[in-house]
Length: 102
Ligand SMILES: [Zn+2]
Image (cartoon, rainbow, N blue to C red; front, top):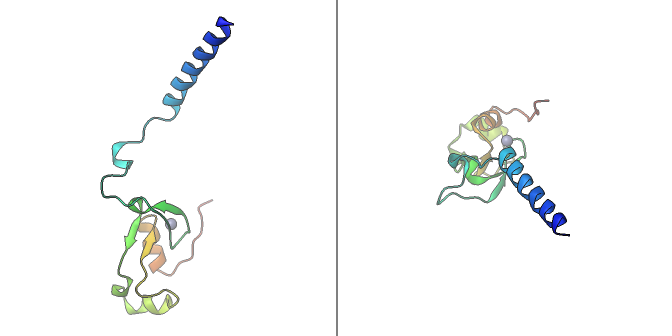
């Protein structure tokens, strides 16, 4: 019976070590800093869900050029826009539709 308990503990330690090796801690720069907004938001371009501080938040789309506000007439001028990255932000304003890289 003691052998079974020892084996279970050994397996647990081995699994713990394996887990630590397979999933190292994310670098500090990836972690939310104090003051970061961690609310999940949806990208306005691809629909991907991401914590707010990891993405790009565009607070004032009314500053965008007139051509853009015309082509995106369905978007409220006061609405905040959120994107995964600057690439998605640029593509969104270029009037492109999301095409996943397959
Ligand atoms: Zn996106």
